[in-house]
Image (tube, rainbow, N blue to C red; front, side):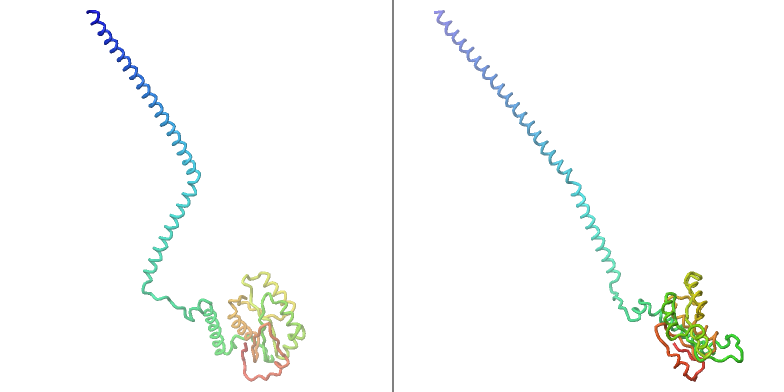
Length: 282
């Protein structure tokens, strides 16, 4: 009876031991599976980090290659918008200042002033006043050089306007209606004096003045206005200097100035009968 009772106890203990071994083996297997899953998750996390770094590096490299034009464009757009805002502010201020003021309309006088016609008109008026004053004083007769009582009064003194670059034109004159040499002196004996009228160069004593002096020594047909500067803007004063110089040098019935592009009929000039004394013809 005792043997029988011991056997089941042993069996039970064996059963209990079998159950314990089974539980321990199952727990060890679950632990190993947990470790493997943790390793796989770590591996996946590492791979995802590597992939993220690769993608981020590619994007960063692309931005580094393309960010300079982009930033420059954004900077240019900013400057353009800023400049446009400044211009709008400036225009608004100008409109505010000129508010209520009507725009000025240019008159004919303003246009003439801009073109310089008013200055030329003023110079012509000054010359006319000087000529009127000279006429009232007897054409500067009181400043004439003393002449012999037997000297003959001339019929006309003709001044031909010329310039520094008109030598060919003067030669054409001398070959057409204007006599030269002895014929010029014979014409003066008949009462007509003809001279080329010219002033001095702005640079006194330069090659222009020397060429005129040399030509005058050969032809002796120049009236050089020492006090006049030969320039286009000084042309209105040339008449004043010519008439005053001609009156001081010659006593004539007529004082005439002509341009170098006209011809004169000296035969008809010699037939003119003096009626007025000291007439100036331009």
